[in-house]
Length: 481
Image (cartoon, rainbow, N blue to C red):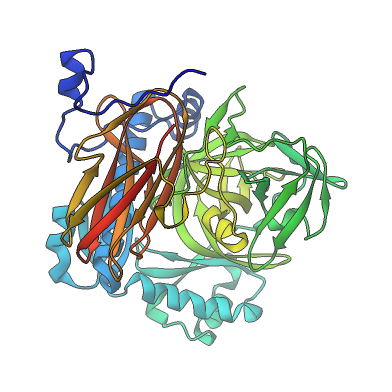
């Protein structure tokens, strides 16, 4: 067996040019994101972009989505939502005195009347009254760009939609009733590609998880059997939700990748949520690999079988047979295909069940490219390397020892951060892409302790420990290929 190699900054790199490049300031922003040629081709076809424009857009979307996440935490109850407009992240706020913070972070502030939490609460009133929704109402969602909750209704029944919203207790000035000819339906008619079969029906694998895969809930009930691959639905929820997971039988090997319908696969690196307005691509057997943008999150959609809440609304087209398939933003898993309206000839709207909700509901672990990394050791014990440090609130440190390391082989990079009790410490794993440091995995919960795991190729890596709030000493346990 070849001996694994790790090289720190103090070791010779081999060429002066490479040393110079690798000593860029720690604040250098990512210049590129990993993207497959097939994804570039699909974006060019569906979005009318050149290959270079597609790369630039993905890099811009990635930066905006990370900034969205950071400002969401920073602004708290004054955060009204964020969306990408012309490549610029627009952050809506309810307190004009926070505008400077938003501009300093690199986004464009816009003052609005309602916070995102207020909009979500208004939408929840509609969700709670869904039994009273007219059949002419196809769904509703929070539209952060207009700072309202949008209710979609058949054009001839707008008054009934307004009456439904009013009866739900939603303030009239916070709701927009929009004429829509959408007639969403579960896309289960004919499904192929990375297909599986449930009796006489077919659906698509969404994303691989340990010992199985996640998919749409309307594809099968708990206990139903599947073939190709052989498995069993261990959990299913529809309507209300539209998610399920299938445990596959021995002999089937889940892979952390998505069919690109061009003879290859797109690697899955994680499941970080992309911002509203970000570019996404969907994989499904009827219409293949299709791209569009995220229009809204937390959308409620009424199918003939009932209403599903908390979906991602997109401009990606889909057709019957694409159900359960994968939605990606770059290499980050976003959701599984639920349903929609329109088609891929004239265009349409498609909704997706967020993948992180599925993982949380069933306690599943998403498989990333290269397989499933072993879980981080509990309490950071048993790690191959251990580093310590101390941070004041708002500060950051890079490990190992202010530098980076080199991994000569592919495999799992595992980091376990043990932060001070009562603080909010975050952990980021970054990889050098030839131009800058790109965050490939992160742990950013409100807790003091964080875990990250990433299956990566050979290259240069480093960890960033950030004290989001609170101060004190930390321990970082690291295990590398």
